Length: 183
Image (cartoon, rainbow, N blue to C red; front, side, top):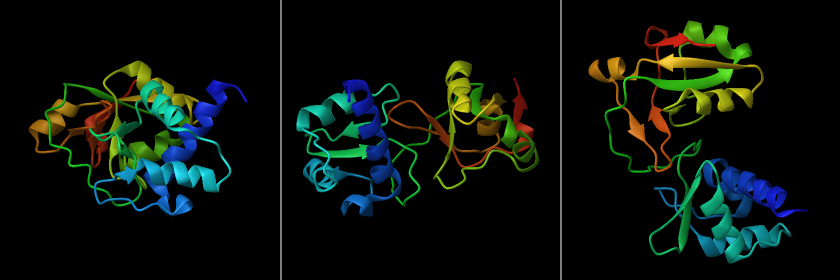
């Protein structure tokens, strides 16, 4: 297996265990989402997957979506957002730009227009600062649709926004009055 496929497969599995199912690797995850790197490496080893320290460091460093972060001392790792398990990432509320964008599939559009953009099984709705990123996200789910979110209006009306370490914008819910369909 070439390095790119290896890194992609490891990144997917790492996302799964850090965001959704730490018990898959028998991980002890802190309330703020941190896991000892030694535990992660041991978990891969128990699944007969050879992952070295330098592989993990490269995957975290080179991940184009910056999904993961190491602690300052490099001994722990966590996902930057997207959790379905209870974690507190200690994010601080922040004022958003005038517009943010949400990518989805055309098959979801009717439901979203009726019920709003919901966080589903995650802690927050994920939004991006640009159309291209939202389009790419929507493309992963089928024919893409991009919604322009009136984030500054939401904020001025008391809705709270956060920004994860990897620059993904997060909020609890986006009512249909706060977005328009662009594609």
